[in-house]
Length: 180
Image (tube, rainbow, N blue to C red; front, side, top):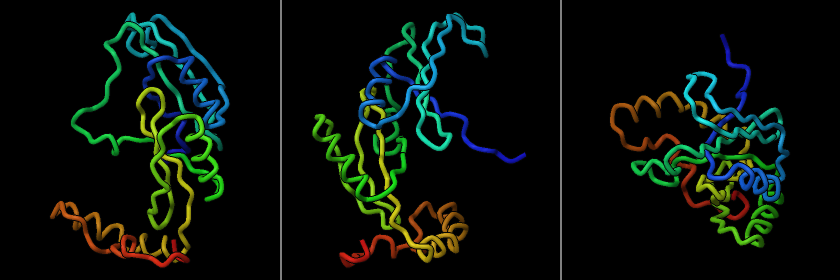
Protein backbone atom coordinates (compact mmCIF):
# COMPACT_ATOMS: atom_id res chain seq x y z
CA UNK A 1 0.00 0.00 0.00
CA UNK A 2 1.14 3.55 -0.77
CA UNK A 3 -0.60 6.66 0.56
CA UNK A 4 -2.31 8.58 -2.24
CA UNK A 5 -2.43 11.95 -0.44
CA UNK A 6 -3.54 13.52 2.83
CA UNK A 7 -7.33 13.41 2.94
CA UNK A 8 -7.54 16.14 5.57
CA UNK A 9 -5.70 17.44 8.59
CA UNK A 10 -7.88 18.22 11.62
CA UNK A 11 -7.31 20.57 14.52
CA UNK A 12 -9.49 21.73 17.35
CA UNK A 13 -10.95 25.23 17.29
CA UNK A 14 -12.59 27.48 19.86
CA UNK A 15 -15.41 28.70 17.58
CA UNK A 16 -16.15 27.00 14.24
CA UNK A 17 -17.86 30.02 12.66
CA UNK A 18 -15.10 32.43 13.69
CA UNK A 19 -12.47 29.97 12.44
CA UNK A 20 -14.10 29.50 9.03
CA UNK A 21 -14.56 33.25 8.59
CA UNK A 22 -10.92 33.92 9.57
CA UNK A 23 -9.48 31.38 7.10
CA UNK A 24 -11.77 32.60 4.31
CA UNK A 25 -10.89 36.25 4.96
CA UNK A 26 -7.17 36.02 5.68
CA UNK A 27 -5.99 32.98 3.69
CA UNK A 28 -8.62 33.00 0.93
CA UNK A 29 -9.64 29.39 1.60
CA UNK A 30 -13.05 28.17 0.49
CA UNK A 31 -15.43 26.71 3.08
CA UNK A 32 -16.39 23.34 1.59
CA UNK A 33 -18.20 21.22 4.18
CA UNK A 34 -19.71 21.16 7.66
CA UNK A 35 -20.64 18.03 9.59
CA UNK A 36 -22.33 18.14 13.00
CA UNK A 37 -23.19 15.18 15.21
CA UNK A 38 -24.26 14.55 18.78
CA UNK A 39 -22.37 11.25 18.89
CA UNK A 40 -18.83 10.45 17.73
CA UNK A 41 -19.19 7.94 14.86
CA UNK A 42 -15.99 6.02 15.66
CA UNK A 43 -16.37 5.72 19.44
CA UNK A 44 -20.13 6.24 19.87
CA UNK A 45 -19.34 8.69 22.70
CA UNK A 46 -22.11 11.23 23.33
CA UNK A 47 -20.03 14.28 22.45
CA UNK A 48 -21.61 16.92 20.19
CA UNK A 49 -19.28 18.57 17.72
CA UNK A 50 -19.13 20.78 14.65
CA UNK A 51 -16.58 19.62 12.06
CA UNK A 52 -15.74 22.18 9.35
CA UNK A 53 -13.61 21.69 6.24
CA UNK A 54 -11.68 24.30 4.22
CA UNK A 55 -10.05 23.94 0.81
CA UNK A 56 -6.32 24.58 1.17
CA UNK A 57 -5.66 24.06 -2.56
CA UNK A 58 -4.63 21.14 -4.77
CA UNK A 59 -6.84 18.63 -2.96
CA UNK A 60 -5.55 19.58 0.48
CA UNK A 61 -8.23 19.97 3.12
CA UNK A 62 -7.85 21.70 6.48
CA UNK A 63 -10.52 20.76 9.04
CA UNK A 64 -11.45 21.90 12.53
CA UNK A 65 -13.57 20.48 15.36
CA UNK A 66 -15.47 22.68 17.78
CA UNK A 67 -16.11 20.65 20.96
CA UNK A 68 -18.40 22.65 23.27
CA UNK A 69 -18.72 20.03 26.04
CA UNK A 70 -14.97 19.38 26.42
CA UNK A 71 -12.50 21.18 28.67
CA UNK A 72 -11.22 24.45 27.15
CA UNK A 73 -8.77 24.07 24.31
CA UNK A 74 -5.08 24.28 25.23
CA UNK A 75 -1.71 23.51 23.71
CA UNK A 76 0.96 20.97 24.62
CA UNK A 77 2.93 22.85 27.31
CA UNK A 78 5.88 20.46 26.96
CA UNK A 79 6.45 21.48 23.34
CA UNK A 80 7.72 24.95 22.37
CA UNK A 81 5.12 27.06 20.52
CA UNK A 82 7.32 27.23 17.40
CA UNK A 83 7.34 23.46 16.90
CA UNK A 84 3.71 22.55 16.23
CA UNK A 85 2.56 24.47 13.18
CA UNK A 86 0.91 24.13 9.81
CA UNK A 87 3.02 25.28 6.87
CA UNK A 88 1.20 26.36 3.72
CA UNK A 89 2.97 27.04 0.44
CA UNK A 90 2.39 30.20 -1.57
CA UNK A 91 3.38 30.62 -5.21
CA UNK A 92 6.16 33.22 -4.92
CA UNK A 93 8.05 35.69 -2.77
CA UNK A 94 5.77 38.42 -4.07
CA UNK A 95 2.74 36.45 -2.86
CA UNK A 96 4.44 35.88 0.51
CA UNK A 97 5.19 39.58 0.99
CA UNK A 98 1.68 40.57 -0.12
CA UNK A 99 0.20 38.09 2.36
CA UNK A 100 2.31 39.56 5.15
CA UNK A 101 1.16 43.05 4.24
CA UNK A 102 -2.53 42.00 4.32
CA UNK A 103 -2.15 40.15 7.63
CA UNK A 104 -0.35 43.05 9.30
CA UNK A 105 -2.96 45.50 7.98
CA UNK A 106 -5.63 43.28 9.59
CA UNK A 107 -3.86 43.59 12.96
CA UNK A 108 -2.24 40.15 12.93
CA UNK A 109 1.29 39.96 14.32
CA UNK A 110 3.62 38.42 11.72
CA UNK A 111 7.21 37.23 12.12
CA UNK A 112 9.46 37.19 9.07
CA UNK A 113 10.20 36.63 6.33
CA UNK A 114 12.69 34.14 7.74
CA UNK A 115 15.29 32.81 5.30
CA UNK A 116 15.53 28.99 5.44
CA UNK A 117 17.78 28.96 2.33
CA UNK A 118 15.52 26.62 0.32
CA UNK A 119 12.40 28.61 1.24
CA UNK A 120 11.41 31.82 3.01
CA UNK A 121 8.58 31.96 5.53
CA UNK A 122 6.36 34.17 7.60
CA UNK A 123 4.76 33.01 10.85
CA UNK A 124 1.58 34.03 12.68
CA UNK A 125 -1.22 32.58 14.81
CA UNK A 126 -4.86 31.91 13.93
CA UNK A 127 -7.63 32.88 16.40
CA UNK A 128 -7.36 29.45 18.05
CA UNK A 129 -3.66 29.83 18.85
CA UNK A 130 -2.47 27.49 16.08
CA UNK A 131 0.82 28.64 14.59
CA UNK A 132 0.74 29.00 10.83
CA UNK A 133 3.58 29.39 8.35
CA UNK A 134 3.34 30.66 4.79
CA UNK A 135 6.35 29.56 2.75
CA UNK A 136 7.70 30.47 -0.68
CA UNK A 137 10.20 28.04 -2.18
CA UNK A 138 13.54 29.57 -3.15
CA UNK A 139 15.76 26.50 -3.46
CA UNK A 140 17.50 25.33 -6.60
CA UNK A 141 17.61 21.77 -7.94
CA UNK A 142 21.27 21.65 -6.86
CA UNK A 143 20.36 22.58 -3.28
CA UNK A 144 17.65 19.92 -3.08
CA UNK A 145 20.08 17.33 -4.52
CA UNK A 146 22.73 18.20 -1.92
CA UNK A 147 20.15 17.77 0.85
CA UNK A 148 18.82 14.53 -0.62
CA UNK A 149 22.33 13.08 -0.82
CA UNK A 150 22.94 13.48 2.94
CA UNK A 151 19.50 12.92 4.50
CA UNK A 152 20.10 9.32 5.64
CA UNK A 153 23.60 10.07 6.97
CA UNK A 154 22.22 13.05 8.90
CA UNK A 155 19.40 11.00 10.38
CA UNK A 156 21.77 8.22 11.40
CA UNK A 157 24.21 10.63 13.05
CA UNK A 158 21.38 12.42 14.85
CA UNK A 159 19.99 9.13 16.15
CA UNK A 160 23.36 8.32 17.71
CA UNK A 161 24.42 11.72 19.06
CA UNK A 162 21.28 13.90 19.36
CA UNK A 163 23.47 16.76 18.10
CA UNK A 164 22.92 18.64 14.85
CA UNK A 165 24.94 16.99 12.07
CA UNK A 166 26.99 19.40 9.95
CA UNK A 167 26.23 17.77 6.55
CA UNK A 168 24.00 20.69 5.51
CA UNK A 169 25.68 23.49 7.47
CA UNK A 170 25.93 25.41 4.19
CA UNK A 171 22.22 26.23 4.60
CA UNK A 172 22.98 28.42 7.61
CA UNK A 173 26.16 30.13 6.45
CA UNK A 174 25.96 33.85 5.61
CA UNK A 175 24.79 34.32 2.03
CA UNK A 176 25.20 37.20 -0.35
CA UNK A 177 22.00 39.15 -1.18
CA UNK A 178 21.82 37.46 -4.61
CA UNK A 179 21.66 33.99 -2.99
CA UNK A 180 18.97 34.82 -0.46
